[in-house]
Structure formats: structure tokens, C-alpha cells
Image (tube, rainbow, N blue to C red; front, side, top):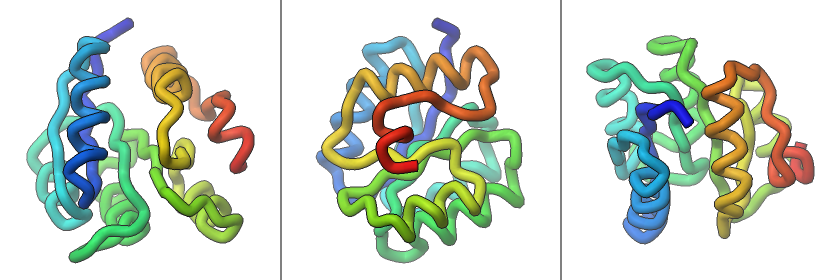
Length: 134
């Protein structure tokens, strides 16, 4: 698989560590942010292929960050992450331009599928997580 530049944004250090280790093991380059404001600053300075973005965070939540990221770097794919996948947040994520919404805990196979879809240039993902919630 092609090496991707990926940002993981979550206020939970354990989630950052888990996803970072997985993505590095898969051969990708990663950058980490603890909130949406940090993510937006990084996106202004870096070219990213995909962002994994938590919905609920302090400073700037995931939806606020998603809106700003869409304005800064519309070509970057964004996958929202949440521990509480409610119908409203699923609908809102897709309406605001997210590629997918992943529930926590993560299904690493679903993440791998999303990454493969991004590499192959698909505009929609076909993962069990996205399908179950979308």
C-alpha cells in the first residue's frame, strides 16, 4: 500500500497512542494533535492525505475542526471518530463532508480498508463500521 500522510486528532492520549502505533506499523507517516485547534494549525502547515478526527474534544470539537479543515484543505479526507455514534452525529458527519464515521473501540480492519480506499482514490468507503452507521 502507498504510504499516506495521516493526522490523528483526539484528546485521549491512549487513542492517539493506539492509532499512531497501528498507522506507523502499516508504514504511514503520522502527526498527532490533542484538539481541533491544533489540528487546524497543523493542516495549515502540512499536506495531509487523511485525518482521523474525534467528535468530542475541548478547545475546538471535531465538527468545528471539520468545517475549518474543509476550507483549508478540501482534498484531505476526514474520518470522524466517536465513542457514541448517534444517528444525528452520523448524519451530520456525512453532511459536513466526512468520508466515514468510526465507532470506538476501533475495528483495525475497517481502518485498513479506509486507508486502502483513500490510496485507490475512492470517494466513498465500504467498511462495516461506515455501513453500519451510515
